[in-house]
Length: 51
Image (cartoon, rainbow, N blue to C red):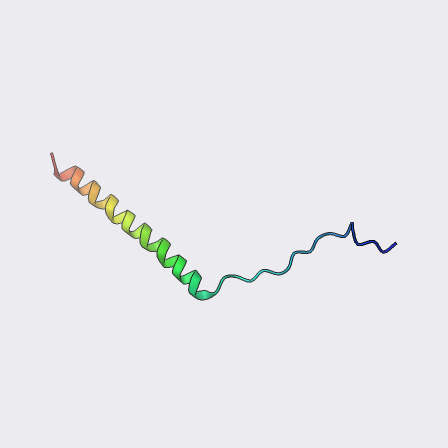
């Protein structure tokens, strides 16, 4: 009666990625968003200034 075929699968505990890769990803994403914001700002300014 002790069959383990119907037992629920227990996933192994997962650990978060190391701090260095998390910080690198955060700064890469933040840097790209910052550059995209600056480009959008310049496009808006030049759309108003140029006839």
